[in-house]
Length: 282
Image 1 (spheres, rainbow, N blue to C red):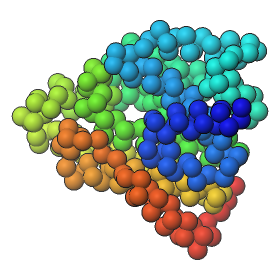
Image 2 (spheres, rainbow, N blue to C red):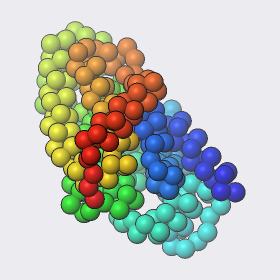
Image 3 (cartoon, rainbow, N blue to C red):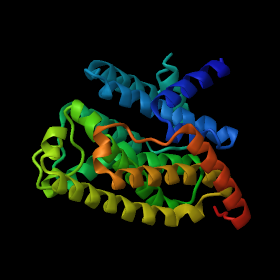
């Protein structure tokens, strides 16, 4: 039974994320198990709202089952039950989960986020609270939480930039169009306004860089064995941002993601670097 449960989370996480998954497999076994349970839950909810067409009824059923399980009702849904067990075992804040589910629900009801304020309202639930949850699962000091939040925000923002075309097919715009001078992000439209589009993307990447730089100040709170996967994921998002910065229109040509070989190579380099440097804290 344990093997089956582990396999369900493994498959769900692997199917949904290359960078996070291939970095997270290098966490120590107990932490890896808990991270996989967390991402199994969040990925399942995300998949319901990101389907074409969205599977709204299944999302609301998932949310309802989670809420009943939280109240003590046992469920045969392995993804939900194991997450509720994790929530209790690690004393995770249910309000963070509520915020996450609220942002997922927004994907069913709100398609365009025109201002940075609207975007960051969504990002709080879709990403920043995940940073809190991971920090809590790692037993990090509360002093680390602002940095965990910022790292999650920065990574989510690169996803928004990388997935412009994919999100557009779902009718969604997460980047703050109000500051762009653009009416929409359709490829044909921005291709006729290349300089305006490039300028807009550059502003978004500079915003990401500022958040990322702030987030990395918090690495000193992370024990070195945990830091290797975290820094690797962070480095891969740096790489993604650099690729897009060189050619902003690449987001219409392919989904920019590092290869598994790149991720594993970076894991090795970070292991050597952090071991030699003796980075540790927490």
